Structures are given as C-alpha cells and as structure tokens.
Image (cartoon, rainbow, N blue to C red; front, side):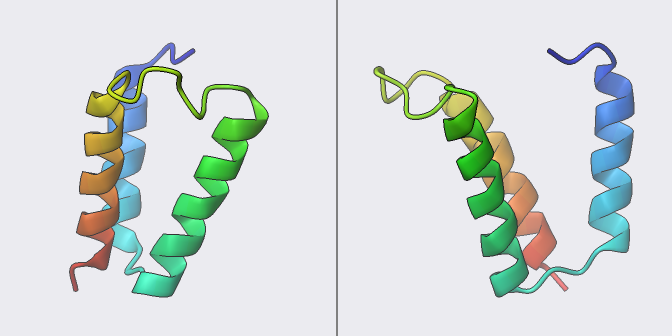
Amino acid sequence: MLKNRKLLKKTEKNFILKEKLNYEKSLKLFEEIWKYAKEIGVLPSENSLEGIDVDIKVSRIINTCLKD
C-alpha cells in the first residue's frame, strides 16, 4: 500500500524525464511489473474491468517513456 503518493508522483516524473526507454526496454519493464503483480496475486483479476484505471495509468507511463 502506498503511503506517500506525492513522493511516488515525483519519482515517476523524474524517471520519465531522465530515462529514455526504447520499445524493448519499455516492454521488458512492463513484463517484469506484470510478473510481479501475478506473484503477489493481484493479477489476473476475475473482473476484467476491475482496476482499469490502473491499467490506463500504466499505459500512459509506458507511452510517455516511448516518446523521444
């Protein structure tokens, strides 16, 4: 559970600004996040629309990483 959302947002913003990820790196990052989520039991969900807001946020982050 996140305790400090402002710190997370700041960290995400700094990561996006500093890291220029190509498609392969972005895909690898996504796959590792997905693997971890499965290991801790949050994926896959029984309700496919459950957590769609999180999926959208992750997609936005990945798409931002792909922009050069």
